[in-house]
Length: 229
Image (tube, rainbow, N blue to C red; front, side, top):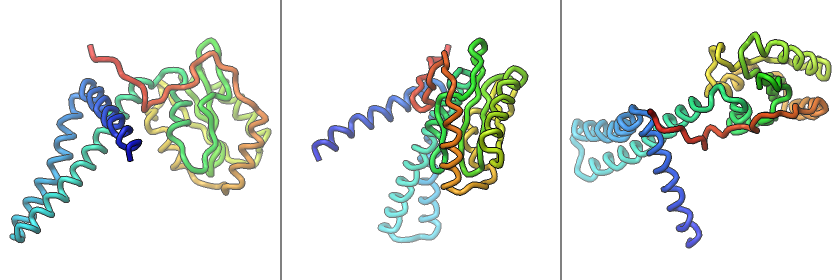
């Protein structure tokens, strides 16, 4: 019990820091959080009055509204904080690797380090293996990363010729936002079983990974946006 009580102030301090960072960088964050908190309370109170229940019933409805409001407020804070964090790292070398490492769960095998890289431009290609097959994610402008992407496609098809290969591009000229990358990957049609995913991932490890002169990745949940000018 004593150990739990020691940890609790740390969590509260962390949440407060996240709130302060979000409020400084997002003017809509606080109004949306207040709306998320008070909205359910107002709704359940009005409903309780309309149906003219007794006082105890009214109190229970208000308590339920407060709990729902707290949950929605925390969800809103998380949503706005992550949006700011992703905006700060988007376009930076290693951002895709960080998203893959922290955002993919379940039957996915991936790495925050790219499998192909252009040392001069820092354009990179990342690889993930899941039930949809092999997914190659290009980080950089389309024209500049096309050659690097083509090389990785040929390597994968040589090692696992019967496995579907999907290509996703994340860059300044791509319509896909970095924060929607993992969601886009999960929507791909699933064709492999869990055992096949492991088998394909093991075979592809023979390709190795690039020795990169770029950061290992940026954690979008830990990045601290700078203060607005």
